[in-house]
Length: 333
Image (cartoon, rainbow, N blue to C red; front, top):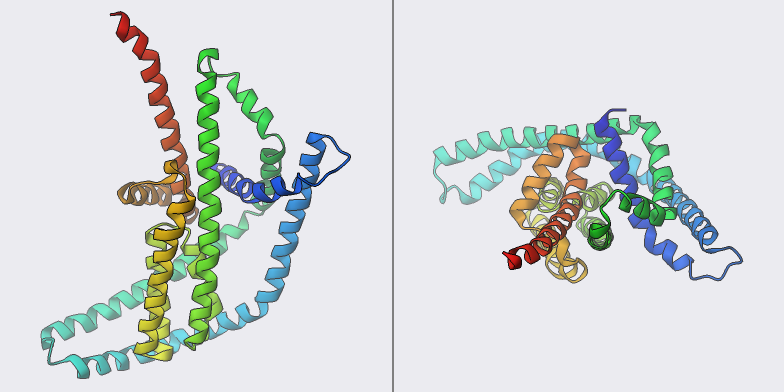
């Protein structure tokens, strides 16, 4: 495995640990004859086994309809290629008095280019996700690393603190606690919003008569984990497939509901659940996504923002520590 793959595995293991942490903390409240460490190990094993079991059940439940939808999607791509010119001609007939012929020709040409580019881009994204499954060793090591992060986090923290000068250890522990809070809140919040987005989008598409509602619902939920850019990337094919299958009115309804879902998740739920350290400026988020994609590919899009949020907390604590250390010296001069 390359260094990049190892870093990705560690970050995904940390994300899995934060995902399971609330469940494990809840299970630990159940009385047991084991000691504190034994209870932690047992509850971690139970939580991991339960998560794996739930994932297996979900896969078994959705694999058949999902497979059927993928076959439908192949057929729909052919229909799309045939219907796009007709849809554009219909649009042209309705609004030709508002747009010049030269502009219509340009739009027609660009629509073909953009449509091909979007389909090719989504195909490459899907290919990248599928090919990432070849790292079978990662699928084994990620839960193992997450297990140790969950059961030995205290010893790992204390061991790393020994590398820090004694006078800076209090600041170091405070920094780790704040990082822990930021990561915990961010991952839990984004997963909740992604799940809600996926379910709401799938239900909306189903009611709109879209045949591949499950596939695009899952895609909407997954891409919602990529802040700012993800919903746009997911929204384009969702609106396109709705337009082709159910018409303009259904497409506008789906677009309106999709925008409402994003507004509720991004402007109402997230600010209430995210701690201050996880709130980043949109420009910082976009730059983080670009760097994450360049360094780690598709997975980098998902891990960039929480990593930058944690680093921001570290920088703030470092600046506060340096400022506190410098204050007495400044006062003595």
